[in-house]
Length: 282
Ligand code: 0X9
Ligand code: ZN
Image (cartoon, rainbow, N blue to C red; front, top):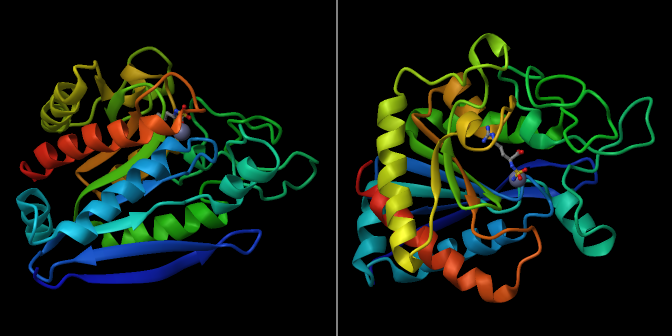
């Protein structure tokens, strides 16, 4: 098979000193890129399991599988499988359902910020908590957390080359895009972007391909409409602050954070089919 180049880089480190590692896979043919991350929420283990299976497929099957070849001929792929390594480690050693990072909070004995409320875009407006003990704590300020800063900086650096940013969560069978907020933050009507129709059309194609794999149902639309109001999420930041057109937040299959390992393979297979359909449109 033809050569692929794979680079590994450290984009930052956490409050407990762990590295944040991005893997870039490139055929050398592509002029554009796509970003995929997971594990912003520590307990959502199906997300990194799915993302590393995607990595495995693309690094091994370029020039072998035409879907992989087509994908990498047009797009470099940047992977950050573990955005919140401190929290992820903590879910193995201490508390399986921990969600946030593990940084200390001034004036509180409770640890952690919800990194998916911490991005510096409409920070702190809706669907957040200002209490450090809450699982939805948005932090002391927009982009206050080291992990958020590292990813914001990568977003700023790469955004001009990216056609899509996909930040994987679990669970609930959902394919969501901006915005998370309501109009005027009044909590009444969800705000839709000017290019909502284009985002929604791509979500339809992608979610239909996912559904067709195992005959399941996936919701699709703005995150505010599909799940609930939030601000300071990865997807809204990447679109709002840096103009990444397709900033997507999937909630992977299932009805809980604790999943049997027999769900990893089908999750990968259905998401792979969704990505193949999606990349063909980019
Ligand atoms: O609450 C969240 O951060 C996400 N749900 S989860 O159960 N994985 O925690 C939903 C986020 C929806 N908002 C955006 N994607 N902006
Ligand atoms: Zn999540």
